Image 1 (tube, chains in turn orange, blue):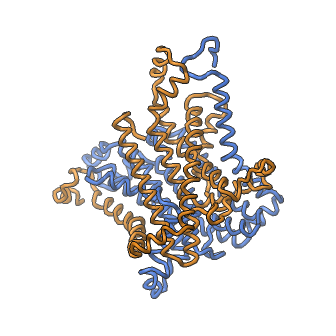
Image 2 (cartoon, rainbow over the protein chains, first blue to last red; image 1 turned 120 degrees about the vertical axis):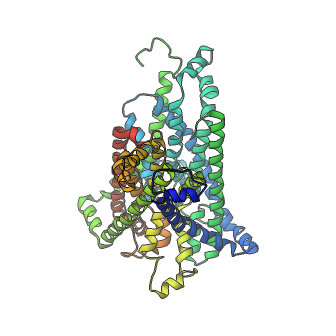
Image 3 (spheres, helix red, strand yellow; image 1 turned 30 degrees about the vertical axis):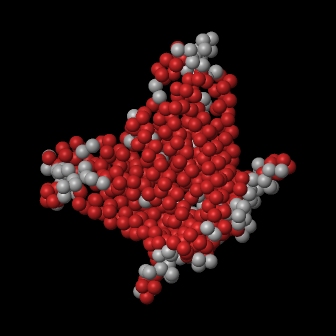
Length: 286
Length: 284
């Protein structure tokens, strides 16, 4: 109804005969501001009101640093494992025909759908020293549950679909003619895969890696049951936020959250950068 | 596979193929399928009667009710937002659009714990707004409103990000035709736009609902863990598990696992039957 008037007033919008721009954009911005931006601003404001000296003192607290290091390093290991198996899984799903392929394709999405707490207690039951797999590993001296290795296992379980689902659509687009050309020019299959196919997949693989890493750093529900949560050994940063909140130490909770938020925004920036680069370099977005 | 006499130059040899397939199957069984199976075997480890009893326990029933209530508020709220945002973004050209899309995706890159924490900082007893709200007798944190808000935060982008790419692909031709033939805005939306996006909308709602009912971290921070009052199903699972009530914990968890399986089956059906209407290549 107001589109003609608003188009004349707002030069930042192209004119359109379709109505409802003011209503829908207004609602979108109001809802976004109330639900997302104001609460995040509250965190930033709390953090800023601490002042530099307090902020640094709380960041450099040994337990905080240890928790951040554990979160980051376990997420990194899990993301690397997920890249390897995620790319192989995407390849198998795109290229090979085998019975049950569609079911396997659906199963890949299961970690997206299954609640984190459910995954957490189930993985703990399996990898605990008396569990299905834990009891097999215990005689070998490998302790999965209640150790940092348990955190890695949980993060691998929840991170896999990120890599598969970013790499798979790009893999589907690869034209087989390129591979035929490589083969007819005398390349071995190994050379074709590593020197022709993989370079084109690099941006998608990096994006999937960054998504899995970002999710792993922030993950809470699936980790806390299996980790054992020993300070300085297997205590993750999100858990330390919860612990500080329960101690009514809002300052420390805010500071850890701010550092994590900065890390995840940097990752978001990195993903956008990879996508912009891949658009220029390879002409596709993922 | 049929032509094994000639070596196909653009695929791997059969042993390599089957090794890779086996590796993927083993990996998925180890990390994804076994946990799912364990949920049900543990839930039924003491038989049907114990399973049913665990689900009829009053706190479990209250947790199921609260989860349904929270999803019944959060999902429609984000559905409404998704429709408004995709209409504004897909049907109009304006500056700052890509920045707006980035902001909508923001909750996906925030740790669930932080999504809960921000509401505690905003509405908690120690906050600027907390005492004011308290003087009016309103409590948000450690109560149901906080749980609803945190759930809305974490499920915020689901519907919007299914609709936006699809509606951008579809362009504005249909709507412009409808308007030029005399339809008003609401008629255009109901009879032209909505039918075009109905399957993608359902797809987004399914994912949004699964996450809303299963969210743990964000809800855990704002709930205060008051049994029978602010415990959703995932939080109840945690409490039972920490009480060493294994059957109870896995019984409630099995309901959530069934929900996840149902969501997955429905989305696979949607993808198979209406894949072309779900915006190609956009899966998440």
